[in-house]
Image (tube, rainbow, N blue to C red; front, side, top):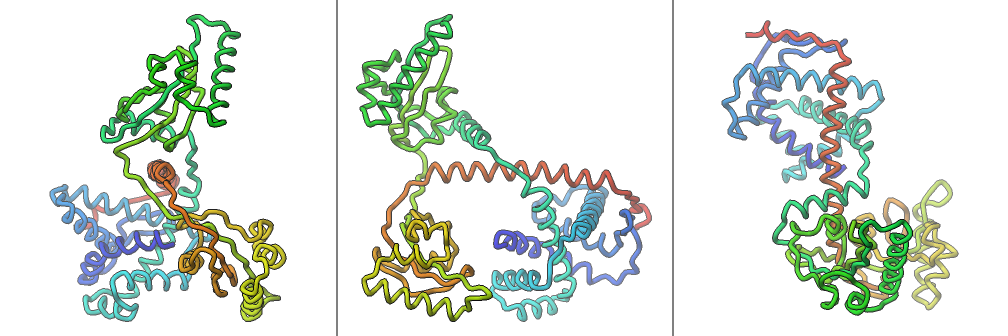
Length: 432
């Protein structure tokens, strides 16, 4: 919801001039379009037109012909009507509580209370009721698009791999990789048996590498590559010059990773990423923690849950085993089986209140009871470490970029489908 509210804030900051311009006119509404069993009124059209003109002026594109601007304004309104009708059909909307939360967030981002924001709107001649109605509609549209389009988008591992490989091929010349390489050759015109034998040898070498044997030593002994006598060291290779076979693998590797066997016409390849430069590394602090949770429900009140955890806290500080108590008492069944162990967690993995309490602790320290939306907890920090999550961050960024592109394409198809299935009659020619 927080991400949605950020976009809503931007939307309404742009909308304010349009709202003001619309309210300065006292018009007798006329119908400018019929959309199935709904209509677009002239006042709505004028409001949309004012908003588009404002945006075009900010972009320095105010020279677009007026006829095109008017058509765009009307088309946007038609699509909005169709989406709102579809949302109503599907039972999608924004209740009063959601609306109030959104209003509060917008006010806070502008450094105002809701009352101060409403007063500021009135002073500018803007109707708070109209503002709220526009906000309610925008939340509804976001929920419709999420349900019918965005949440249905799937991004596969292969798509992420291809995206990263393409980035490498595009020539990010600031990034370079130092690789070691072993080639198990396959003769030209090799039989199926010869290919199988080469693959088996490459698999055996890979097993030895994973068991800890030195890559350079095995390269010098078994590789048919030109750099075999140099321990298979290929030196520094700019990202844009990676061989196509390697470009699918290398961007997703961490230093020290070994991948293979990768098959090509010349044989089977094994590569090791020795080092990387030119990439902005992302290091985060991970925390190893364990906890005990007591949930609140019809049978366990908030007060009872807190008292139970206070008792458990006293037993732990008195010397009893945390893990044993977690197994016996924690309502988080998944972690309770592991003595409450949550493993190594990265910032953002857990809810903010839990992370806030956990981050206050020293290694070995046990927190006093605290509450989250899941119930009452006590948490103990078992360790902390710095973790290089550069690859994970790159893959996450790639995944988001792919999802964004696919979402935009899918949304356009969805809107076109709604438009094609609707009865629409426009009456722009009736306006001055």
